[in-house]
Image (cartoon, rainbow, N blue to C red; front, side, top):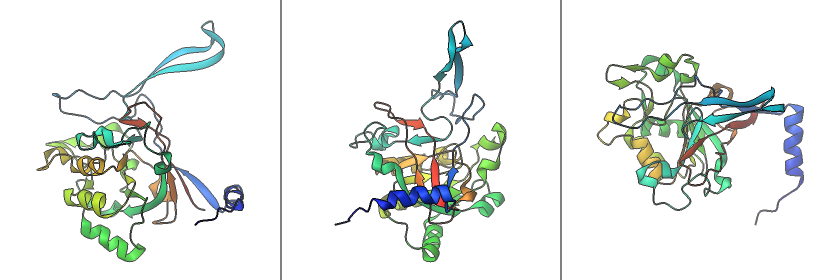
Length: 263
């Protein structure tokens, strides 16, 4: 049995304060201009953020400032729970209020696909590519977050970020068989991407539409989207904390994703 040593947490704080470890913010700033996914017109759209002031040191509240937030659960850097997709709707503990919080924290495995995506914005990660990564870095450990570093977060305008064109959006993601393999052959927490959704931009037109959502959530895995600063993480050796709001029955939530990494 593991014997906990109280000085482990003290050492963590010492390393953070002393510069041996750093905290990396992986979260896109959330504002009214933050892009949200575009769906075909036959489907109900997800709204972006609307911020309405309640008071700001005035007659409505002389000593305080606060706002009303109106937004979809899946806005900006956000968490996808299994209940978000039909394949995960009947799983136990599948919503943001029932997922055990231990499952929000895990080691990061970062796959650098930047050069591939520069050549082809529709690049799809394959099983073979992950297996090659594992030969160099070891098998993806249980309870890990698999993060795709693509450079997509460097696209600063909404038009560049969503990259809609002929035939829909064009952005990288997972080949269908890759999503299935990761969700069933590796005991991961889930996947994280820099793009607006965890599926590729063209995934709605795949033979089985949106396979990453289908396989990940059907197997109780999670998704994180719109990540930034993945270039500040090592390939392995960082720990990611991605805790959604505890929304009752929530299918997802905006969240502040942070990583603890070697300095």
